[in-house]
Length: 270
Figure 1: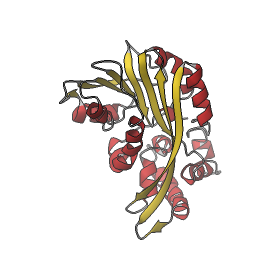
Figure 2: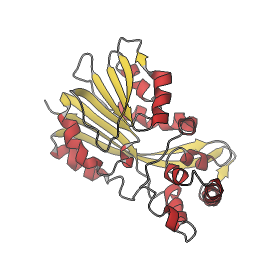
Figure 3: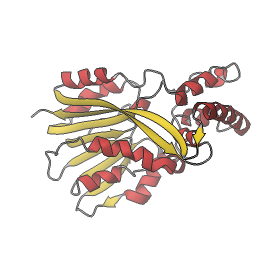
Figure 4: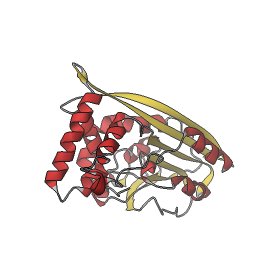
């Protein structure tokens, strides 16, 4: 899998739809033990949903972590600093593949990031060790690698024209585990775990809106590899666009994108 180059502006084009699962995740997070609480947001992106944490916990000291300089620049410029409730919002560069907590947290949260981290299950024990007793680890990830959005991309990458150049760039089909796998791992680590799935039916507007959506996320590895070859990039995007049009037809009210996500909220004992 290729580490993608991120485009904050493209990602935020569908910010409302992308933020809704985070709100649903936070609704299941219980009260935090610390006062003021200390929170880590893993894979914070441009910081727009990290800022929502300060609305829920106004006095919290919150740090968003991401490995994209472009995303962090956006977060620093628009969200960093003291919060109205007396807390603070900061951002720091870190790679979740080797991020290690410093100090104790009351909440470690991650929104649509762990599916980019190979072996993320193995990191859970260390992250949970850094939680205060009664603290929470909560995350959500896309759980739709079997949707046309991704299967059509993989099929195209596997064609003779693209296989040699793009064959290994996409996320693996096991980048997200079955819900029972997460439940078992978190429970065995001593947590009271709640794991569930939700399928959202996003109604998108505009021309080729599903392509526009995936340009901000799943297509990023392809766009990264082909960035130095605009002709090849445009050829791939055009062929992929045509396949998406057939899979996600438009209606007079917009284009429906079914999107399944997996959620987990794990409360540490104590």
